[in-house]
Image 1 (cartoon, rainbow, N blue to C red):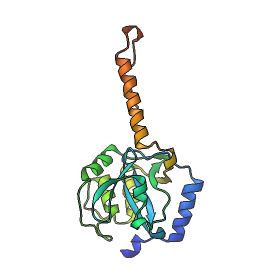
Image 2: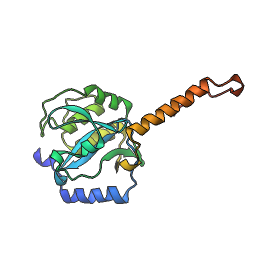
Image 3: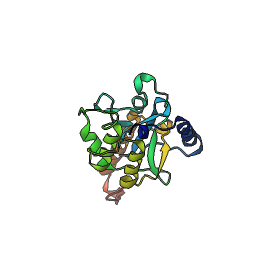
Image 4: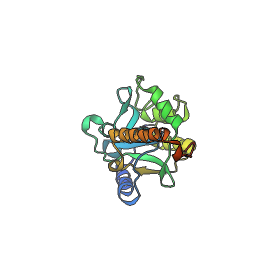
Length: 201
């Protein structure tokens, strides 16, 4: 079991180079995307669920399920983690996720579980958010990727280019602007009608 948790760091370095330099990055994960980063010089990985607004739900090593920023997600092991990027579940070059997965992750926030590296780690939590079964054996990154493929259709994994993601404050400003535009439409004189009665993003 222990051997399956660890991955060859040389392979991790090569994979990271391909992900960061060769493949196209994505501007932001989808709601309910699986995200992960390398740990311990590439020997381990840390995973969680993206819930929007630049926030990730993960199971911390202390056993607490919490919402964190991408920076905190990367800053594991007391600041000794050297990972520089977060990788996201994708298909056909686009991030894939699920509102239901994000909702499951949110409902777990605030809980404390009996964290165990070999049997009840972050991958088990993340896989539980995907499938709804938190009593699973997806203790490795490869098992988690299989769950993401089966439930989300994630056939590839791409790096999240955080420089292209609006900060939470900017996202809030965009929502306010959109709300103001909607209000002005509602209050517009009848001469300016008709407008579409509904629109889908």
